[in-house]
Image 1 (cartoon, one colour):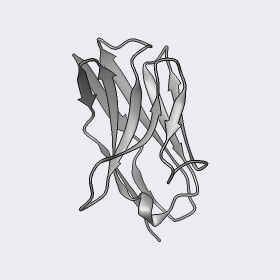
Image 2 (cartoon, one colour):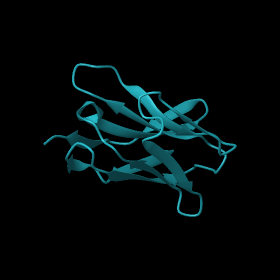
Image 3 (tube, one colour):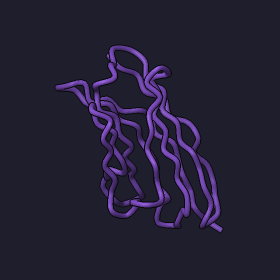
Image 4 (cartoon, rainbow, N blue to C red):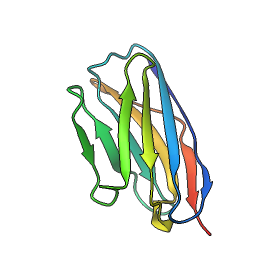
Length: 115
């Protein structure tokens, strides 16, 4: 079993920055991929950024150059540093971990970008 707890969401103005954190506990190892997803109202959940078992990273085109995913292996924590935020970044952001064959999810944290 793996538990994921996100934090750091909130209200921010367009152009602003925000950092999300996700702390993992349980049976998770450094080689297990972790990722951030988001789901906006009326839309499907989409991948935002992923850090793979070999520490390579992938980003959605919509956030490339604005968001950075990182991982603190000692703390079993991943981060999502978001900058130049846009109104279309408004969504519930979810942390995910893949411990095959199971995908684990956090409860989500709301990010609202609005003036």
